[in-house]
Length: 250
Image (cartoon, rainbow, N blue to C red; front, side):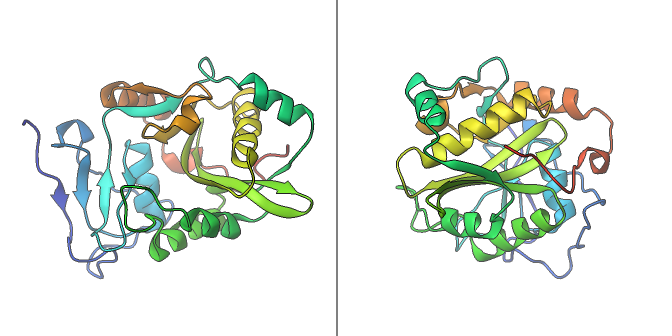
């Protein structure tokens, strides 16, 4: 197998005191994901705002289990939605027209991430949204970079999703549902607004899921994905692509 072993900053901790804490306008250069042996590009460091923003703009994201070190990953292939591929299944379109759910943005970010963290996957012993991961994204939300979309029914939070927006790219992290169609409706309403009203060019869903495939999600090679990011971001400082403050109204 070709490729380099992942760069190790500190494999024993997710908050190395000797590793610099990067503010949101500070950047770190990760190893090139195309040189990685597998999906793990680097191990360790910390979950400071500047590290996370740096990672996303380079096609990398933090993904690890509770007892793991901090893994920075860039899977191949990458699962994405584009404006051209996006569509809403006809049955769900009827649900949206019927107004079964009220959809909001950035109203209950912390509750959304708490519900998402309660979800476990079949191949994991626990949630990948650890306490320190949740804290990291709450920091990004307070900086106006991480966002949530909520689905409400009769005044109760019944579904939602969260992720990070940098420029024309939304990096989806997780979603949850407590009522059938709640998270699907939240995603459909958000994606339509993102592509058609907010100038969005790509939703990155990281890895394949049946849920997102229904909306036109497709696998592309890591190389193609990285090229898209370079086209979107170019040599622009990521700080100028961040959009703090009011995000979107549905």
